[in-house]
Amino acid sequence: MPIDIALAAPHPSALAAAADAVAAGGGVVDAALAAAAALTVAYPHQCSAGGDLIALIRTPDGQVRAVLSIGAAAAGVDVDALRAAGDRMPPGGPLTVTVPGVVAGWAALADLGGQLPLARVLAPAVELAADGVAVSPGLAAAILRRIDVVRVDPGLAALLLDGGGTPLPAGAVLRQPALARTLGTIGADWRDYYQGELAEQFAAGLAALGSPLTAADLAAHTAELADPLRHTGPLRAADPSGRADQAGDTITWSVAPPPSQGATLLAMLGATTAGDLGSGRPADPAAALVTARRAEQRRDTLLGDPRMGPIDLDGLLLRADRPAGPTPPALPKPAGDTVAVAAVGSDGTAVTLIQSVFQTFGAGICEPGTGLVLHNRGSVFSLDPAHPGRLRSGARPPHTLCPVIATTADRVLALGCQGGRAQPWILAQVAADALTTGDPAGLLARSRWVIGSRDVGQDQPSLLLEPDTPGADALRATAADLDLRVVQLPHRHDDAGHVQLARLTPAGLDAASDPRADGASTILRGS
Image (cartoon, rainbow, N blue to C red):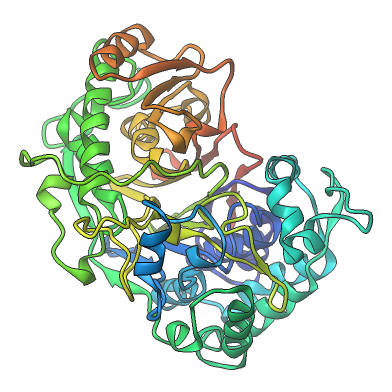
């Protein structure tokens, strides 16, 4: 029986690709994957098949699973040489490239609920890469913002500059024939990316660029399927059109486990009444800010790869006091690091998928043979030998990607955002109201706050406020107590995130896309 699908994504090409998949008989997973693949073509500054992926999927029977396709550091990485060069990882370049996980993540999601062959799902992305896509305003701005990096790398320069060396402007046609071939190969047999001729070609290209990653490192990668971390709290009405508090009416929040920072979002939702976060009620924003600052510090000192040793989950969740641990040097500003796709079907299936190259254009490298923009997730590793997120052979880096699914007895919500390390506080400000508001688009347009330092372009720990942020006076006063400098933003800003939302409620399906991005939302009618 055909199902209808609500979907939100940050670029129109993603919606068109999803519609194509649904018209071919695809379901929620196919629509989300088609959108995700199209975004690797249209948004190379934010995501790529050369990056990582974290997703959550809910099946109609109510089971939620996490897909963590996070690539590891090379087996032959020279940790001593990197420590000798400085106290932090380089911000970009070949030494920050870990094994890309996106492709294995696509395949894992397809196995969990796809209805179409992967080649059919990727067909719109292949066509988009071959025929060309208009450069979006966001991509044009990203090229100018990182023009020095683009000019230095031959692959990026060939991709993003015209024959005279001028950056492609908004509206220009971006053609990527090498990427079209790569995506076509992935569609025919995704395993070729990690173990076949494509893997050998990719490994040779990486070696020529100075990366220690080898074909053996690619072959060793697998996507992890895991049970999510969960928190259950009360459902509160967001506005007069929502339901009022009802006894026994609860929300279950599901997030990805470490090395994702999902536990940091659960700390936000669990430390105060979940239904009050971000609702604009007096004193709530200040309480959320205190929680965010504590959760930020815990994440920065405790998050690492559970495959390499135990992770202090109780500490990350703020369930227990912990002494201060080693804090890694402040990370560079990701600025356009991520895309999120949210999709929910009328049968209760839900997917929230996030894929990323971390910084804008990732490591600042486009491998010319494959057309893949390579991520710089390795820049997040700590070089402190005592830190749980330290660089080691085969370790996965601490990860910012933080999708969330929420469910009640009669509602399903898929939520994700761009926003780097600020994703937990961005999502916490909209999550509580997202199930019950009568105006999801207005909710995403509402002003927000974030905290951070170098990751939000500041030279010290700071609170950034968009205009008319709810509870701004209380936030300013609390920031002083937390030694946070207050920065007033003049308008809505990318640093406050690009949230994508899709949901099923008693009123039916709907979706919304953040006005801070180039995207949109749609309802796709099953055929």
